Image (tube, rainbow, N blue to C red; front, side):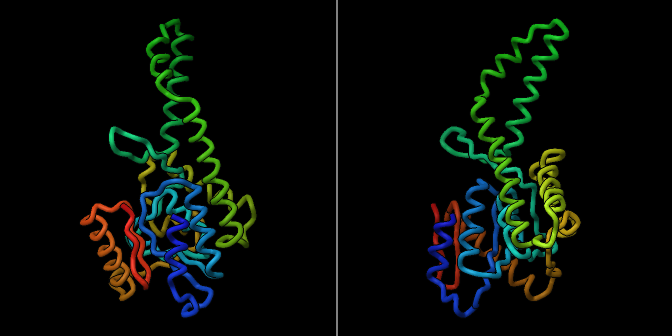
Length: 244
C-alpha cells in the first residue's frame, strides 16, 4: 500500500498544497508494518499530515491515524483497537483475525491442560487441541502486537503527542490495545472516546458542508469498490488505481 500511495502522490501537483497532505482512510485494518510504511510515505511528501476518517479506520487504520498530526472525524466515524489483524487462509479465500484471539486461545488451552493435570483428569482432549495450534504462528502474533505498540508509541511521540511524556504516551497506546483485549476487536472508538484516550481529534458536525462532502466521497468510493469487486481503491485528483 505504501508503494501504491507513493505512486499516487507522485502523480499530484503537491505545490498547490505546500507541505500539507490529507489522507481520507477507510479500512478494516491489517499489518502494522504496512501501516508504518504508509505513515513514512505520507510524511516524506508533507510536513503537515492529517488523517480523515468519514466512516471506519480500524486496527492498522487507527495506527496510521496515530502517525498524523491530527485526525479529522465525522460524528459517526470509527477508530478501533490497534491489536493487529492477521491474514488467515480459509479455503480458497482469506480472512482477517485479531492477533490477540490466537494468543488468547493458545494460553487458554495451556491453562486447561494444567487444570486437568491438577485435578487428576485426563488432559489428552486439550493436548489434541494444542497440537493443532502452530506455536510459531502464536509467536508471530505476539511480535505483531509488540510492533503495533512500538509504532504507535514512536509516531505519537514524534508528532501528535510530541509534548507528552513517554509514560503518558504509553498509557494512550495501552488504552487502544486493551479496548480489543477486554471487550472486542471490532468495538468502535468514536471521537469522544478517542479524545478521552488522548488523541488530537477535530470533529465535523453532521450536516455541515464538509461532512456531506466527505460522506458522499466515502460512499461513492465504497460503491465503486463493491460494484467492481475490488480489494482496494486509491483515489487522488489525477484519478484512481484499482487493486483486484
